[in-house]
Length: 499
Image (cartoon, rainbow, N blue to C red; front, side, top):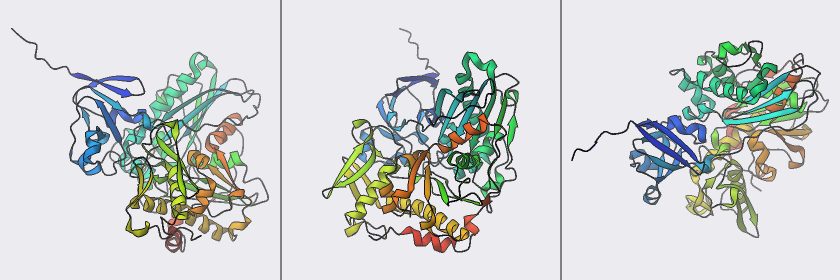
């Protein structure tokens, strides 16, 4: 009997437990389809970091050489693979739910200025995007949309994005398309009332969205050619919105300090008072601001992706299955796992907690070495932190601590003169302050630190509601790499406090 031996040109990829079913071309790279569903590609898909873990629930996905380097034989047998190396050559059911995480928005009420119409404020983060639609007259938030930044498939940090963009132009249309779709979805049937969309982000996000050359950001002294506000029409961005709607990306401050920090200065009001205050945004690109009503200093420091779990052996975002907090109770570790599910990995706040607990137990020494020659520090279930994970945290926290010390030195002040430190961003919202101080990430008493939430989005809403609002200034940008004593200070900050 004649048999139809034709092979379908498409296969089905199901994502569990998201209840997502995708029909894609046979042979499609999984990296091309999974980033928007929360799978991270910290090294941009170069199979170097092992951060893009997925598990094959059903179907066949042969293990390659990079998989065998990262996973044990037991993990391979359980179906674990690296998404960056895999292609959908047959239908697959993949477990990716452990990577999905809520995006930090801002719910602080603001007063409107009586303008008619609607506006949208957008925080374009390196990892996540948050957009809110407001009634310009009342200031009331009418809708919220959040998404993962689709550029994550091409690098977890800003430098990874810059290097990718030097040889591939797709990052600009990727981010424009995502933000445009969020804006159109928010406006819905009221799109004719949309007057303005205001965006903020770090310098790399500003450049990639605006289509500006990122080459100056790829090498020292990392000084961008353009830092000014960028203004667009919907037609220029290929957005299906009224031609009268104005789109503007707020200006950057300098180097890698972007308009998200400018918005944060507005939101916290640190440049309006007489006392010395600070704003710290803890992320892959950590930014620090010192300010009072007379002076503003700011700097950025490459903290790396440890705070978001991307460079950690069992690291993941703050999502279901992540160890998010670790406390020491009667000499034993108590781990909180998000979602009350079996522990799969550890997120940034859990890592800081775990190291702080390890230091108190003397299982981790002040120099960062695990005691008694151990290579792992067990937490719960199969989740451990390794010697390499501790080193990653040391480098990240040293970058932040050194940055603060150098800005204080430039100001001519000491840490005890800081009245209040505003911790911004998702990591700053969830990290336990006691653990941040215990590890030396923050060298300020916990009573003078407050979690400020998404200050970037709040500041963008302020700029949206008050288009003529003057930006604080002048702002002095301090390039830390060229600051006298930077290397020595950084090295001093690598060790953990010996308490």
